[in-house]
Image 1 (cartoon, rainbow over the protein chains, first blue to last red):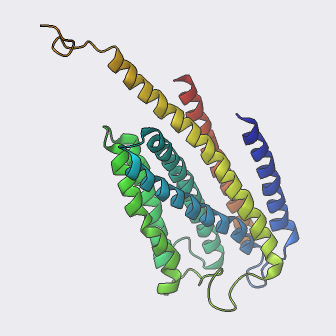
Image 2 (image 1 turned 60 degrees about the vertical axis):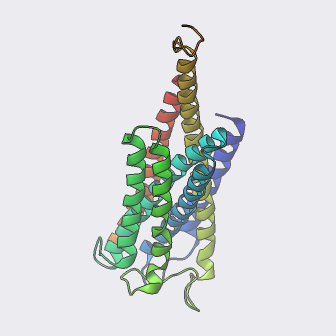
Image 3 (image 1 turned 180 degrees about the vertical axis):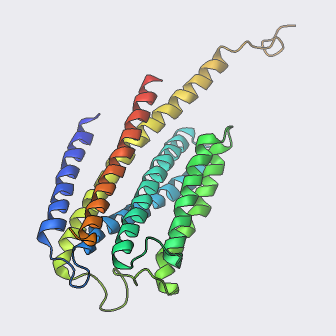
Length: 243
Length: 36
């Protein structure tokens, strides 16, 4: 692993440790829900991570579709980053669903309900799982193009998830951040949000960069193999100028 | 420990475990790509 990655990991672990300490031992517990509301300090960064990495996936898919026939090296980089960011987004989305379910059971008395926020989020997770399955099991040169197109259509669910608590009445609470006037966390709780937001996003960047590097290396090896097989392929007599 | 505290502990533990699990997958992939 490169030196900058080790340094990045070291700082990330420090930020995460501080986030953990602040979330559990420094900020006050919620006046109504008690300690269980501290789940928010891991729940919200997971959604932020999901939003960030699915947006990166969208951008890379657009770049791939634009340059795939003109700039093969850039297309390969964009496609590798698209895979890495989609996987990272799926992980963050899954954690958001799990932590939300645990929180819901303690506060609402139910693990799950089919309201607009929860359902659209589950659909989003399934879309990106399908995207990864397509990449894993589809063969042929069109696979990457199909995956990029699917990523663009899949991303359409992200704004729907974000707006669902504004457009429809849901079991999930109204927006805490960027909601109606007077909404938001008490300022005394914000340090835990900021530390954990920074820590988990840094963690996501670290893991996604590792995944990107290995995917790019694999694609490069695949391409080199294909070129080598062309190089040593027997040249037909007519093409070689023979009779 | 009441239900709220129990669920808080499970949520934090699950978050960390899922991330570590994925990191393990990434490490295996990286090793495979290096061997190629």
